[in-house]
Length: 330
Image (cartoon, rainbow, N blue to C red; front, side, top):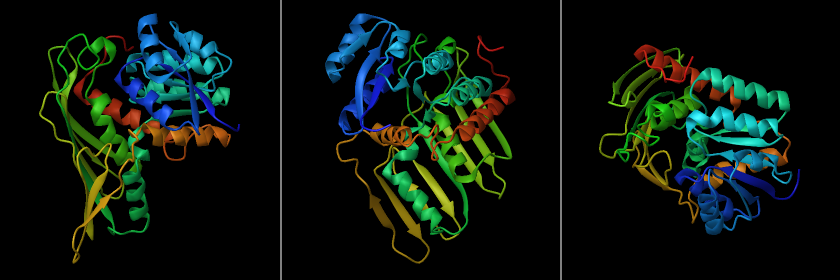
């Protein structure tokens, strides 16, 4: 496939809005052709804001559009399997927002369908594609820190309290584990692979959803990850990567960073700044997707499907330890 990739988006919430802006920022790679919403007013509002020519009040109409190459799934997590499967069954490539699905069973079903259809599928873990995180991978490949022994990650922020929104309504898949904690689990996975042991505790709130989690993961070479996430606590979003020769401190917000400090034994700290240059950050994952599709690939080497399955398995393990299930799970 050559030329611009024609995109459709499902949903009109904040994340979809940011992703739509990002697509408009990379017109050489992508064309945002269609939006699907539950009503015409919200479809038109997003369409007017980003000059989207086709506005549908049915998600399936986006999937049926013969000109669309790929669909971005920005609906609540509880609907990801439904919406992504619909898009795949209509022959569309899919970029699905994290958390990929509610559980590993759903994730495996989605991956199996994409592979059966020979279509591209990727979890939209945008953090991996930021220039800072690309630079970290380069430093680790050069063994600048020596053996890497672990990470600590904080992702604390107060969500707008409303028992009917996606942050607190358990029927919409509300879960700080699947929302912000999944960033740290995913980053640790990219660094160390699948954990050999995990343990954690959760604060279950009045809605039945987990509002806070503290997680510890151990990996095969002894590395440890210590992760704290909360949607009811004051803002803290930093991360530290520890090695035998030094450390990297990713400054807040670590999951969409522009600066970090490299500390090496016997040397002055080095501040590394990689500004986004007018981007909001979603452009990097979007360009990865477009490049993969143009190359005829069905998954990304940076965010591969088997790793997404592994991450969902880890998230399930934590919930199993807490005896936590969503009302709609088997």
